[in-house]
Amino acid sequence: MSVTPFGSAPQIAPDVARFMRPASKVMRLARMGSAHPTRLSFLRVLLRRLQAAEWQIDRPVWNVEANGVGHAVYRVRGAERTYSLVAFAHDLPPELRSDRVIATAWDATFTLFDGDPTPEDIARLAENVPFQEAGRISDCELTLARANRSVRLFDHVVKALSEGRQPDTSEIDAVGYLMRTTAVYGSGKFGAADRADIAARPELAPPFQVEMLTVWLIRAFTVDIVEHIAAAKGGAQAAKLDRDTRRRLGVGNSTGLGMAPFIVRHPVLLNNWMMAREEALARVRAQTAALPDAISELTQESQAATQNAAVWHSAHPVQLRKLHDLRRDLALISQVLDTHDWTARNPWDALWTWGEDALTLEGQEALLSLMLEPHGALIDDLAECMGADEAASFRIAGAMSVRDLCHILETGYGWALEIDFAAPENTARFWYVSEEKLEPRLGERATEDGATLEQPLCIARLISELYATVKGMDGAQPVAALLLAHPEHRFAVRRAQTAQNHPYAEVHDNLIAADMLPIDLLRCKLAFFGANQFDPRSDRWVRINLFAGAPFPDELHAGGAV
Image (cartoon, rainbow, N blue to C red; front, side, top):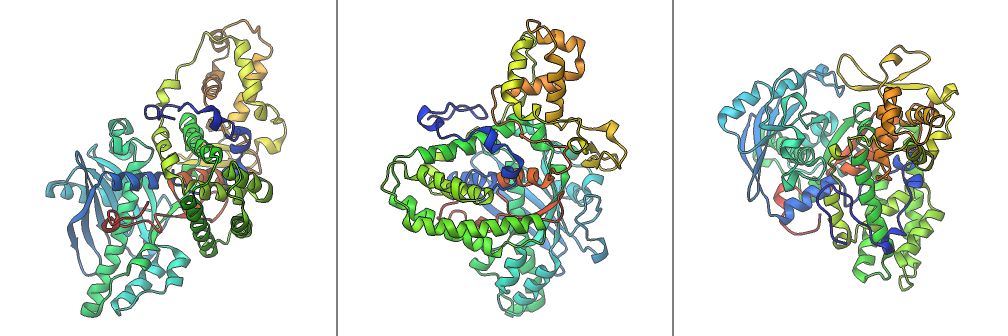
């Protein structure tokens, strides 16, 4: 298959299409909340592009004092453009350290500058970036971010290196990062460049590339600053992190409800993410034979996944059950790989079919990730189809007949029409935007005020209400007549018409039900980012790790796949 222009839906070959999983299976919250990162995750896409195009990375500015206060610049230079992370390190009193979005001070603050900043640019940014929302940035900046130290591990690593020894790897594995970001803003927030201004650049066309580049460079900064402080404390005896220990470190992130509505509000984008991943799996399953190198790499990846699961910790009951399932399922996968008949026709499909019967949702989605890994040459082109021109689907087809609209609802939204919204448990929650921070929140309808400000995120209920209206209308009438009489259904009509050509556009669950877990939405999106080590702290916020195991800037061109 040849890849179509960026962001458009590819044509799936018939021999591959028959292996595609239906949306009715893929788009359920329980499965979406079991997602694992894959080689199509956005951070992997970024690193492969930087590596293939031989982008050069250096650190032209390091103006940091012995106590770790100051600023630095990390520069990424390609054939046509340069991007620079400007990092500010602060002396943060312990009592001010908070991961909450309402925090006003952080251990470090950052912006990704479009180009090579001058001293005047850095001076301007120094007066604004440390204040985050309270400051001002311009369209010369692409992101705004902040991070806090993981104090226990940060101090442990400083102490060990200052004494000339490597830190305890068990301590590193228990946490996984020296700092965790509490926000990475892009796409025009707080004055930064709009997405539309940069989307045509090939290196930034896939989703969330400026955010991923920001976090990858922050990871380099976290190691540089811990080594800098250790050298100031220990002098000549101080050590630097060895390669294997350094590779264990990623960047943490604390993410809450602010991220959850994104995939509901961007149905075409969600469809393209899911479509790319599902076609990748289908392409692998459609192969009639298995190459020895692919089998060997699958075995290695299975072993790595088992090791990752062993050090993956969480105290949340939901995640504890998932980890139990994952560890059990990875052991089963390892056993099956030792005996699987790779000489049979369609051996990859046989492996997948076994997994659907034998594994939990957690294990099935882990197996998906494992099966994609050895097949970069077969599937990596799909990364170019994961963006979306959402404006193209915004216009409502007013000439469509009500009969045709009704058919779309009955065939594409049967899952929504089966929900009884008269039952209190099916309308127990409501989504709204907090007045203080302009961030999405989830309210309890029976006990909290604010339902009059409810956001249109329960697509199932909106579709159900639309269907109740159209099923009593003359089917020959146009949709335009429907909306003239019932303008309140405009949003739902647009969703339905959009979903007609985007089968993975909708979450096939009730997003205001009493038993809905927002962390399922978070995990789905974060897996596409490339996050691992999901650690829910409630059903509404989670800690994760990004870039653990990935190369650092000085290793990117040293060889090895990313």
